[in-house]
Image (tube, rainbow, N blue to C red):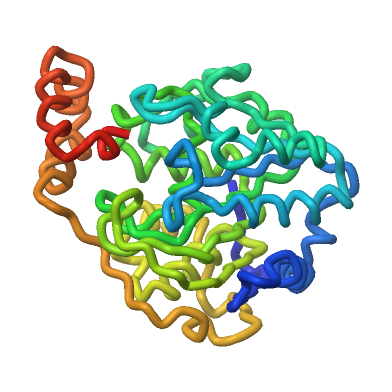
Amino acid sequence: MVKVSGARMRVYLASHVEAVLEDRLHKGLDWIGFDKLIPTGARIAIKPNFTYPRYKQGATTSPALLKALVKILSRRTSNISIVESDGGLDAWTADHAFEGHGITKLAKSFGVRPVNLSRSDLVEMRLPVPGKNITLSLPRLLLDQTDIFITVPVLKTHTQTGVSLGIKNLWGCIPTTKRLLYHSMLPEILVGLVKLFRPILSIIDATWAMDGLGPMYGDVIKTDCLLISNNLGAGEITGCRAMGIDFSNIRHLRLAQTHGILPDENLITYNRPSDSVITHCFRPKRDLRQTLVHYGPFRSRVLSRLIYLSPLSAVKDRILSFAGPERLK
């Protein structure tokens, strides 16, 4: 279990980072004490948000940020993996996403290892969530072969979960392309994944953010910021605060708080006021299609199986096709 009570959490807020990204990232990592968190030679896994097969501002983690992070970390270790699973419903493979986000070139330059979790060695695990009997096949790499797990999400809203930050980014560590069948248990699964994978660092990419119909089709906002934390829960609180969103209104974050994953806000130390880096007020919203999904398959596993695995899936695809080919991805 991730224990946070009694410890001092540090969050570094960096603004105007575009022209000096590596410098701001390095200063932020130094400020949160990453040299004490990451032993020399540590086995590091970096989980970006590749919810699209190529870089898309406000939707996927910036290739420039990943390059800067790998460059800094490679001075401490040569054992760095960048991990992602295949897209939902086989929309694309993680290998295509690695190519589209420049990870293949990054691997050649710095010796990092792109790992498609959907094709990695898996272990059947019961999630450590009291009162819930949830078993998933999960990557052995993240369970047994990683010393430091770093989540690198994008600052954005989400039509179904409210926000998509460091904890929600772990959803992509479930290697099946049928992840959507588990949406009705999403809060419990995310809490279980945090406990199993134990992410240490949270680096929220807010160079470009997304508002409204996130995580894919919302309004793209240039915020030119980074939120760097030595504690996952502190990063979640800070991300919500920066967006002007009450984290207690987010189901999976409320549950995470009851499990001790989110710290007391009084224990978080900032290098500057947390509301000083982003002025835009974010508001997640749903169109009619997303509202139907939210109160249908997102809340009901039975409806999920009917809609996505039965002959009804053909009807669903025909309806979605009217929104244009990009929305089907």
